Image (cartoon, rainbow, N blue to C red; front, side, top):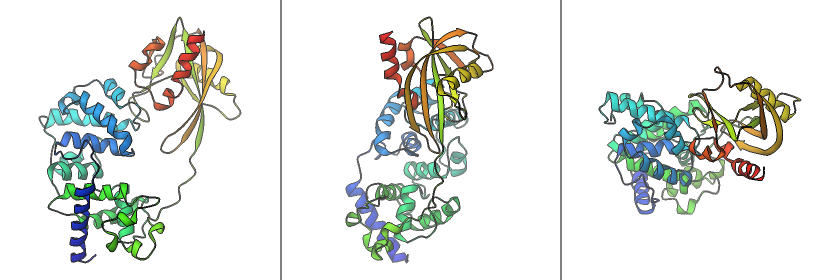
Length: 361
């Protein structure tokens, strides 16, 4: 785009944003802590889902110091259901580093902020531009889509090597005087107007500058590489009952769902019946012999890169002691204590049936 076109683009976009932006709880603030929390939550998660979680999180952890001093299980419990739990673990670790190394003051220099756990280029650009007014362009999926249509960019938006090009374009368009407002305007445009399907081109403030619109090619952009089929895994899980208590185990602190609690189980082997897989996995994982009493539920759940079909069984304890080299931790708890522990969303899908099962025994 020519310099005069860039100026017109900035002016039109920002004017539209100021007039039409959604009322979101992390806007109209320069508090870096709240902006940071919101941007971490918004990664891979829709705004409507984030809003109630954001309110609960900042109500419980009102500032960086309270988050840094919180127990990791409490943080995970407040985050429970939002998914991508490494975000919560990293945010807490980063808060502790800021408290210990920067006196609780969130650093406003790129190199220092960027090195904190969980802070990538996107988070760094968002927080530094919105909280500190620094001229870093934010490039997320919404922004890439806007840029791809605006300038009919042929590079696939989901190809890692394309990121550099999109950043360069965004940097050229960035309004240096109000970078935070500009970045939010770009993301807002992609979220509510320049949508993936059925974009609202008639309501677009930069329609006249959009090359895809002017050439009737909006539906052809952005260009995307075809994804590989999503693998599906079959899981067998057992709720083990012993003297009025059930066994829960905690996952190791790192990795998928790290630090969360669950019921013991694992993948079903080829040709293996789910009930047999349940007893085998419980023996291998926690060193207990159990008897399957009933099939409780079949749960389907999707993660980012795979899906699971989980058969849940109610089992009776027979013999053995939980192996010390098994899960990170374990507890025998009353069923009414389930709400005290952070569990993956897939587990919550069968909690009601589990309570009904117990009530009928």
